[in-house]
Image (cartoon, rainbow, N blue to C red):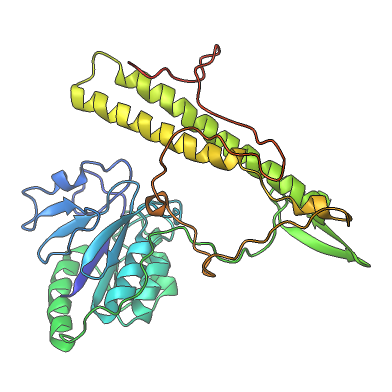
Length: 363
Ligand SMILES: [Zn+2]
């Protein structure tokens, strides 16, 4: 089964010829095609099998990922400021179906799709680009033509016919080709950082060695010794976690108040309440990190009197970070922690306050 992946952006209802679009504003997009195209046009569902004769749209705020025989919806990092983005779709399709993939880049701003199209070509697939001269926004087709050895640059009216022919040829040429396997792109993954960054301003850090003393200095002058950098990093990390906890707490209050508005229908009210409960659970998960005792190697610098800390065996060497969907469900509850290493850990729980920063759970 050849996999046809056709993408573009900037659909305008008044100009239906620039079809196949996505984005957070396009929540009702598939309905637009009802009765206008002979194939069913639907939003992709997570884990849904890929069925021939259907057109799948990426859902707002989810990457559309191809795995063997099925589609996945991922919440991985935005690419080119977009989620869904074209690159992860093309890349995952190319990894799994290689030469059976035919990828099309249509009108759109900037360069999304170029890297994905390059992967499609590298794995033997076919690259089609809309003629930028007729594209409503030529950025994406032009970028693809500039960087990828594109097979066909076609006007919109000719792309459908070309797809039919190429799909039929692909089936004839490579009926034996099954999935190539390959990893899907669902997760945030932890690669090696390109450079250390300044914990104060985020600029790249330069390592300076003065005899046996090491300093780190950013390009506007923030300077740290090794223990000072470790200390500053932890402070920044904690304040980022606190900011996240604050936002989650606000969401609980906001969503619960919205759920209790009398004008809402029952399903809508339940959806807001479910979101409030989800934020509450995630607040609890986050505060476990905030109140955890962190190992502070900087405190051991220069001290020969401290007990060396225990070193836990490393987990799987692959440094894959995980998505919330992969993390085990927390049992919830409060974030109380036992003191570790004799140090009293703070306790942070959601409680109604006089300032009203926390929501009351309705009885
Ligand atoms: Zn700096």
